[in-house]
Every structure is written in structure tokens, then in C-alpha cells.
Length: 115
Image 1 (cartoon, helix red, strand yellow):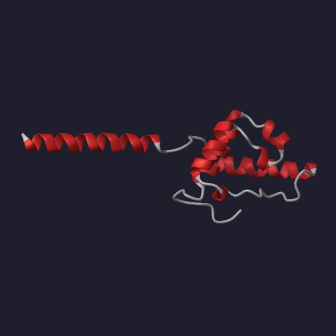
Image 2: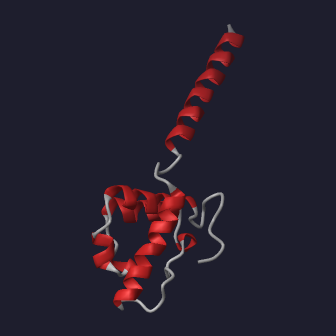
Image 3: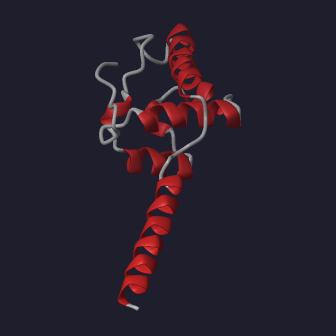
């Protein structure tokens, strides 16, 4: 009887740990496309003269995964500047950028090393 109870407890533990891994994967966009789109936003913004540099001044590793998640849930992109460019992005482009920033956040397994 005790062996059956232990096996059942272990099986339940595996089921719940497997489910948590599935839910903890983050956004499902294309991170390579997100990186390209993110940089393109700043190039066009610099051409317009709103920012000085063509490279983004905010690196993915400047925030944690939870912080990026909150920013994209609330859709508050004011600190990115370039509001015209951010306003013209499609939902797919936004998801790709979110995926890129989330996957290379400070607390991710592979944080971004440079801007």
C-alpha cells in the first residue's frame, strides 16, 4: 500500500512539474525577426531625428523577464521613445520584439551581452 502511494505521489509531482515547464516558455514570436525589427525601429527613428543613435539605447538585459512581460502586457512603450514607429508596428512585429527582449533579459538563461 505504501509503495503505491509513493508511486502515485511521484507521478503527480512529474505531471505538475511538466505542466509548469510548458507554461514557463514565454512568448512565441520569432526572436531573430524581433531583433531585426527592434533595430529597424531605431534606424528609422534616428533618420527622423528623434534619437541620436541608430542603435537601440535599451538592451534586453536592462530588464528582467518579468519586467518585459509587464511592459508588453500594459503596452506602455514611452521609455523606448520613437512613439511614431512603435505605433506603426503590427501585433506580430510587437510579439517578435517582445520575444527577443524576453529571451535575452537579464535573468534569462542567455542574457544579451552587448547592445
